[in-house]
Image (tube, rainbow, N blue to C red):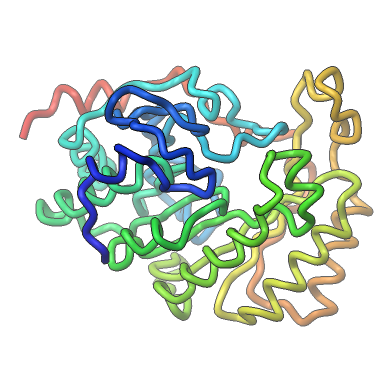
Length: 314
């Protein structure tokens, strides 16, 4: 793990591929919408991850405010745009990890953590020194710099990145990131280097990389290209989670993205799954039924565990 002082990184922030170079310690915000102050929108036991992550007791998730990618169809828009969240000190973040362990979480699941990576790395080290034993999950949109991921080498056990797009035109239109695939491909290679072959115990992943891809309406060609790339590049070293849960935001059509105003059809999703089967993909997760009608969006007004953390004193 590369040790880089938090203050050094935050003075000219280049944690994500946006490379804003803003002085976040001086209250400036970059594309992510956040200063150097860690903000958290929710701390909870979360049951909506892959079965090997959620397990029986739930994944101990910490949803961080802000996002370097900001997709037009984001389901967590209220936190990605920085409208929700409470500031946490390094000590409080450390206590959050330990409290989730006390609540019998299966792991510590860091959701959209990239823009706070140095602060998170320090909190993980402090928590491990105080008895944290759970696997650490790094749950990201996949738009990462290898240099940032190297800060986490030896601290993260499970990487859970998206690979959203293969087409530069699609990633430009929906995430203003024409270089998305280039960075995501390099990032996943680094994640696999760190985690190596998947390790499971009693059905729970303890180490490894799961790459998520959510099929978008009208974009099965891009999805198939992604599945093909992942399998041909990494074979069975990664698990691929192919999701059909896309839910159109209410205002997506009026914002000029009418092609995303519907859900993925059964035929579209099956087309992608069938291509995965044809390629020989075995290590995969798929979704069945009307998952797009289910609630995958947590209640970001529920801050009960954060209140409990602040009552605790070391």
